[in-house]
Image (cartoon, helix red, strand yellow):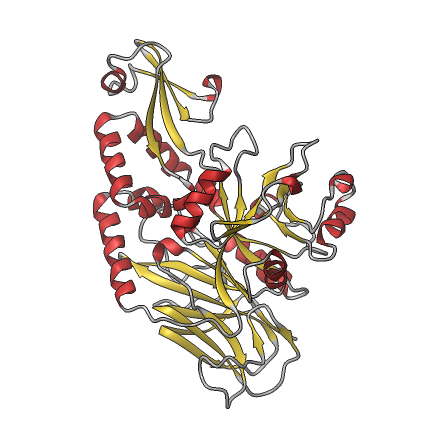
Length: 440
């Protein structure tokens, strides 16, 4: 296993590109690895008095022309996926106030309103409609006032953005993975317009639904490097961004006997990709017998339940109320996990005194906490699944252990965070990212 110096370099080079993972052999091997890891999973309780709550950040429903899902659909899929809390991120559409969206608990799921706007995920405690056009520093201050929260979103588009006043940032964004997989998206288009390729792809989605969506998941070094740089100066809570819209429902529209359009269920015909039967002869079989203008639904890639399992933000809170969740998130008592690889509930990281036993509910500091450095003591990391556990200090790896646990003596102040990697089909894939313990 190669030594890694910084977050810019993953644990080991990827063996397969995302498109290479979309074969029956690779998906079956990944699925077998996931089941083998789950068979040896340890049940780890969260520290008392907290509950380990599964939360979704950056979630869209009924909020734009490019969103295909509804809030009732989101609720049903959240219940099916074991999600406790959804932080909505409605696109800003004045004069509608995004804080007038769902703001209640129903059928076991708590909804907290918010908006994706001006490059942020904004979750103010109350309406900020009167402040939406304010200069950025004043807008950030208005959203973050009181129990409000504001996170930098889509960091790849604003790497030099000033982090002053922000609650935190996305440390993973599902859409970023899709954007950088240009070759994979072209390969997908080719499969969708070939009868044999389409049939196989439909079968793979039916058999390995999470593995198909998860094939694009890569280590977000760009995001993590910025987070590591910025946390040296200030506390910044890291959350996982689902960026889910349920809009990746691929369709084919017949134009005439020699032409078709490929796009998604939310696309207008003029924005879809036009294809010629001469270049894609398999279209004749797919479109045979259809009238001009008819639409064929080919593949549903991203229903909410699948997107929720792709990335989940676990939050330690004493109860499932908006006040408790806001307080817990602002405290950084959270970690991000790719749930499709395995249930990360029970993961924990703490700075303990030398005399404190493992899994103690007493700690000098938990992930998210800031404390003055004291000589002596150690950082303990506990993982419910066995993997490669990394301890990072100021963005540089300082310790690694294989298994369920890492314990490392701390000799100097710094910003310490953890990662857990799992080996799936011979590849090391990132599974868990913790918020840091800040020892100043």
